[in-house]
Amino acid sequence: MAAEVGQAAPEFNLYDTDRKQRKLSEFKGQNVVLAFFPGAFTGVCTTEMCTFRDRADAFNAMNAQVLGISVDGAFAQKAWSDANNLNFPLLSDFNREAVNAYGIPIPNFAGMEGYVASQRAVFVIDKESVIRFKWVGETPANEPDYDEVQRQVDQLPK
Image (cartoon, rainbow, N blue to C red):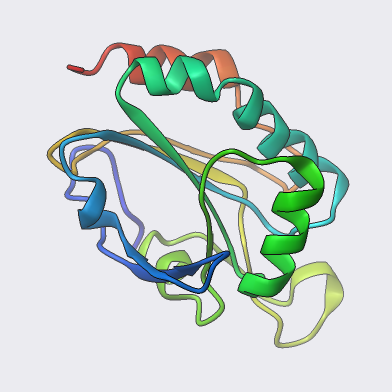
């Protein structure tokens, strides 16, 4: 079942690039932008995460925390984050907990039988952990409308 606007955001417990477990609930009281992406070290994903990096000050000013989530391991995410100077946490969903809870898996990704990645998706979650905006790309090549994501966050109480 997919996570939908108006529903409570599914909780998760994922490792960050420092191998520290992070939960969605630790960000309660802040607005959150969950940016799911298929894989580190790929062109569109790099563009997307670098765009969120470049807009981090604007999101921070709106009391919003950006979190990037993919099925990549924490070690690969760490190297990719460092290479791109990402200034927000990347979370490793290697067991597909969040991908499945949010209803956005891509089975047999890139023709690899049995490999499940995440669709490119953005969820804006308010301070009370309710989903207020959802965007899921039709294909992994589609990027979100970053201005629209920012507008959605800006409409939320700070």
